Image (tube, rainbow, N blue to C red):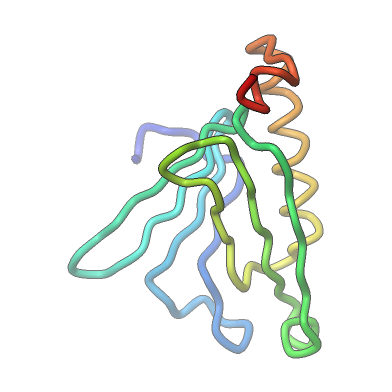
Length: 117
């Protein structure tokens, strides 16, 4: 993954500190989630397949400046990718939204293609 240029990177946070082994990365065309230390699991979602974004910030998350961004896609293997406890979640959601729209324009994706029709 080192050869990919990332627009944004973060880790899942506990009490606002990035001390977990769950890493999130956003490139120009994909969103990655990597979990684990000894056994590593990597998932990715192609941005042009994203259908919707959701932002949740509980009171506890707001106190530590984090939130959860859920990415819903038309991908069969990864329909929902949850970016849990990321720093500055409003910025992250808007950044993902901007990249999703850019990739849909680049790939000339129509709404019917996203909905599965």
